[in-house]
Image (cartoon, rainbow, N blue to C red; front, side, top):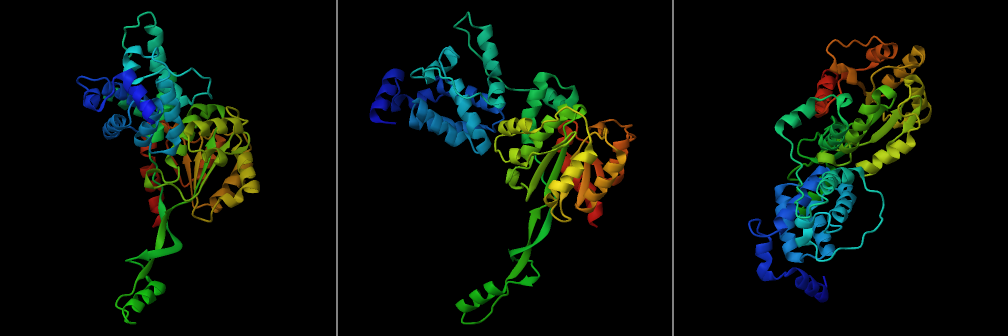
Length: 421
């Protein structure tokens, strides 16, 4: 910030280094309360913001001042750590601090000037959901300017427990949007295997002769120790087939959001070695290009544009035939883990499905069927397509609520463990 800009900010807000501590004191100033409201809005948008980051953000504002551009840069630097959250932060910051009339009592102390209203790009769904309480408060208190708008995204423990066990197909519209944000935080550590590539290690069985010669050169030719090479440990390649037919519509959107966040490269220190995503209904759609987007909203937008048979019928045999003819190289040897997400209500020919599933099983490591209908205790795969899937899958797992997704990694490991012995 330039000297003239700092002077203008000081003149408009009364900012001085002597008053910095007062503005930052939650007991007597406004800055801490206003910053807390913005942090709550970020959490509603799915951005991980904790108390430590909020404390750091307050210190950053005390250092850079209250100019809009400086505030935005400082808060983004300390509050955002994931690339997919960067555009969400910028849109939310612009909307939150757009005009002092939006939250006259809450934000007036932090706005030296009111910027012009501009028509930008459409907001991401996460930003729109985070601002929904603000819009409702504006409509409710438009006639009373002295009313204070509260930003509170807290949920009781009972609400969280109920949403964890609620079936995706039974959620209300508001609960569905909330769960769509919560599934982004569910981790999916995949099974790992020892690859053929090696790296230096202490327990390897192969000598690392190049390192041994370099060390011997430093000791006059004496080989005092023999370094070892160990096989690199990496996650299994992943191929996912998601049913987007009418009976799976409510599940498909949430599962795509979950898989995008949980299998992103480097997510939680895990990530995947290779990730291929397909949607199927009456045909097959390659969603791998859409999953390359770091932002979840952008992924869903591109996936919706690519899928032409959404909420239609299901012909899994035809979809697998297209997979074999056009994308057979996506199956990386016998290590590929295939997750087939469907309720098994197939309308195609059972003979075609039987043939294609036999080919898929022979060319992958493990084939797991993730079925929302397993939520019913008395479920039996009696439908024609479900019966064929049941015979060819190495295991069946339920995916119908947040709790089942949180247990998915453990369930996958439990299913695969007997077959590794």
